[in-house]
Amino acid sequence: MRKKTLALLLSFATMAMMVGCGASEGAGSQTEGTATETAADSSEKVWQIATDTSFKPFEYTDDNGDFVGIDMDILAAVAEDQGFKYEVQVLGWDASIAACQAGQADGMIAGASITDERKDSGWIFSDGYYDANQSMAVEASSDIKGFDDLNGKSVAVKTGTMSASYAEELSKDYGFTVTYFEDSPTMYQAVVGGQVAACFDDTPIMASNIKDTGIAMKILDGTGNDPASYGFAIFNADNQELVDMFNAGLANIKASGKYDEIVAKYLGE
Image 1 (cartoon, rainbow, N blue to C red):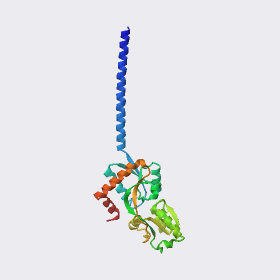
Image 2: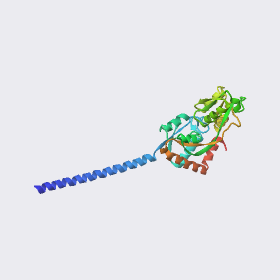
Image 3: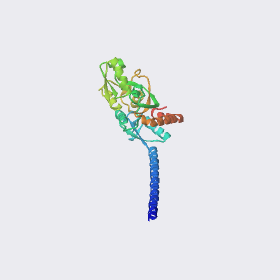
Image 4: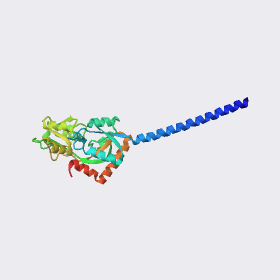
């Protein structure tokens, strides 16, 4: 009786071990599958890129209702070169910064000048992809010829931009006040409508708008500052991979001539 009982116990133990091994193997397969799925999910990541609403010729809506521009074409060419996927969030300048800082967007491309001040405040920039400066424009028939004629007047700038910083510094020496706008087109209309005496903005942006829209403004010679490079930006070091891919792709499209094609498409040779 004891031998039969012992045999039964041994049989049950053997079955338990087999079931246990089977469960262990199943668990191992499940873990391996999860790891594979995680790797696949990583390769399928869609980066969220924030941008301004209107900063022609770098980002703007064309006559067909398509959102286009130098920044958009560079981003597309870099993504194709590096093989990553992305979605563009058209938010506006301030909202783009806020979205990146809040983790709602991974990066930002919107004609953002690379400065030490921005780096110190948490911006992480790519290599520069375009050099531009800021200057002053007035209504086409205005008799304002330079900064000396601005005393006691109001000038327009776009909030949080290099042109705003430039105007703020000049206002201390030339006695004018600064009025802030959310986008360039609204700011230009304030100049043409006489609500402000002048505006400060990135020179190629104003030149492009004057040329393409015929808006009654003129850029004043001798009002520009030293040029600085535009850069792609992130605000979270965990997204450094995105900056690295942008830099590598930018170098490749410059070497291939694609970059020059993009710039020429919007600004001419």
